[in-house]
Structure formats: C-alpha cells, structure tokens
Image 1: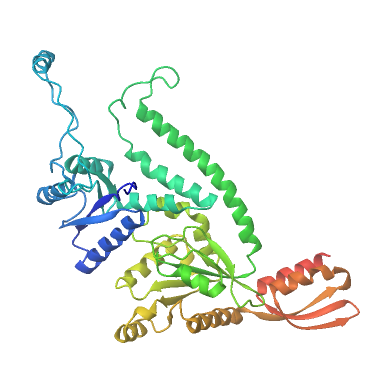
Image 2 (image 1 turned 60 degrees about the horizontal axis):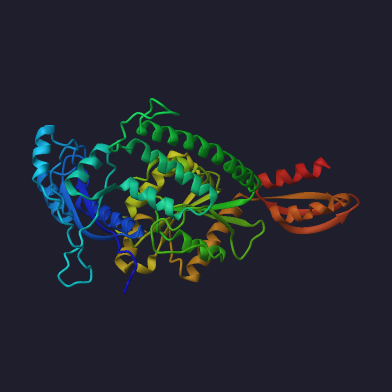
Length: 456
C-alpha cells in the first residue's frame, strides 16, 4: 500500500487585461503552471477571464467565481466571516432537541466509488491584496496563493547558501507581514508581558524584530562577499544573466567544466557560482552563473539578492542568455534587461546569446538572424558552439588589454606568481636590477602590479 501523501492539487486563475494579447496571456499561465509544478503541485484545471483590471474584491466576476467554486467544492459566494446573531434563549431551545450527529464515515481513497479529490489550492497569476485572498478563500473553500507567494516559496525551498537563505527569509517575512489576519482569538488582548497587545500586534512585532536581526546578519555576510569581489576586481569577469530556465547553468557547465546544478525547472539556481573559463587563459577569465529572472519578480527579492546582482554590476561583460526556442523569448529578454536597468547594470558591455538553437527550425533561425544580427546563436550541448563562444569572450578582453614592461627586483621574486595570475607574460629577461617581464593585461591589473612592485 502506497503510504506517500497525495500530491496537492491546484487550479490556475488568470485575468487577461486589455493590454495583454492572447499569446502573452497563454504563455503567462503556462509559466505559472511550471512554477506550481516546481513546488510539487499538480495542476488540474484553469479558469481565465477577460477583465479591465485585477482590482475587484473577488478578482473574478460572479459567473467565473461560481465556475471556480464548482471545481474546488466551494459555495461561490464571498460570505462574511462573522457568525449570524442569535439569541441565547433560541440557541438553548434549538440545542435541547438536537442529537449529537454521528461522525461521517471516512471514504477509502482506494475504493472505486470514492469521491474524486477536490483541488485544495487556487493559484492566481497576479499579485493579490490580503482582502482579495480572503474573499477568494471564502468563495472557493481552498487555500489561495498569488504569483508572488509561489515565487517566494520556491526561493525558500531552493536556497542553499547561508546568504541566500537569509535573503529569502527576509523577502518571505516582508510578503507575509501585511497578510497576517486575525484568528478567532487574534483580537484578544494579552495578559502579563506584552499586555495591551493583540496576538496580531505581537506577531507583527516579532516579524519586525526578526527582520532587523536578519538584516544585521546579512550585512555581515555581504561584507565578506564584498571583500571577495574586491579581490577579483582586476580580473576578467563574465556574468551569465537572463530569464529562469534559459540554460545559463548548462552553458556555465560547458564553459568551465564545473559540476554546477543543471535541472529543467524554474529557479534551479539561486546562489551565485563563480568558476574559471576552461581551457584556462592568462590572465584567467572568471564566469559567474546568476539567479534567473522572471516576469513580476517580487521587488523584495530583487532588493534582497544584492550580491547576485552585484556580480552582474561589477562584471566586465554580461552575456544575456535567451531560450531562443521559447515563443515569448523577446518578452523574457526585456524582463531581464529591465531588472538589470533597475540596478544600473545596463551600462555594462553585453552580448546576446541565443541558446537552445538545436530546438529552432530553419525558418526560426532565419528570423532570429534578421532580428538579432549581432547575437551569438548556439546550443550549450554542442562543443563547437561553446568553443566559438569562448573565443568570442577571449577576443572581447583582448581588445581591452595593453602591453607593458615590469621589472621584478631579485629581492621580490615572491611576487612572480601574482604577475602570472594577473597578466600574460610574453617574454622574460634579466638585468642588474632583476627580472624584466614584458606582459599583456588589463590596464588596471598592470597598474596594480606596478604599485605592488614600487611598494617594496
């Protein structure tokens, strides 16, 4: 007998506003379905409606609300939470003649005549207010989640490093705080410590205190990260950026030979990974794999993932990785650019990489070449394509390099390793002052080497 808990069932709800066409609306719902599946839910239905906006109290019109309630087993009516007023005398009179009802038998899920299991979750493809969530839950009898809540929960489950976990917990608490609701006893005043506070007030104060604690811890972790990035400042750095599931991690693996996580799911990567471009160059090139973006990425998550976005801001070259086989790739590219514009990374030199070209037919390839003539088409699984991208990266940095001559005194030969790490040594010679090196590298790196040699 299978003792595993049943997979949670969910219904998707979409609102198509006038500015959204049919293709974009269908793609958004398909993406929401993938988000829901990433959480382990099974999508069993979709309810969609054209409306002027999403500001209605119950999100949907009465007809569509009834259709949704029929799927979930709810009443379809936004009822009040307050119980109807009843006189105490009437309650005693009615209660005297009532017998205690026998408990209903629990149906066997394996029986052939067992009733079909109702979906217990409704997921809406928009950000909802707390009152909208409560209204939908009363009408459907199901737990209601909005798009932001789903994304925050996925980030919560996938965060691995301490920094990512701190960032996600902060974003999660900021999402939960305004959605706290009074329970049946939530408005009662406490006795003793915290007297005068309701349970809701206490919960909100705990969240504020926890946020302050998390911020202090995160500042410490990020200071360490800033030191590490500062040490890499004069090195050649490439950041892979783009929409979630565009194939950045696969490309990272192909470029660096590293064993980074590669999964066909949304937000498989939440932590910044830095590896060396292979075959290794002199000076070596560092490649960063960053968290993927998504439409309507919660602002608190954008703000929280400062370190991941800083990798993009401080990179020498950004590679915008796009899933060329996705019909909505243009909109996904604009989402990525908009997020990076928000932090000022749009000023960083960039190249567009059209990934997954092995899934694009000849007509699609021709259209992409016409629209993006300067883009780099490739498949991360084709070694010759990855090799060509590597050559493009190396050529980009070569354009910025300069040649110079360094003299390494005989008493300071311990710095030779730093020279070889930071620049390409073209030739070596010796004179009465020490080792004479003709090098090629970035102007900043060579200037730093000269300062270090002069300091002795």
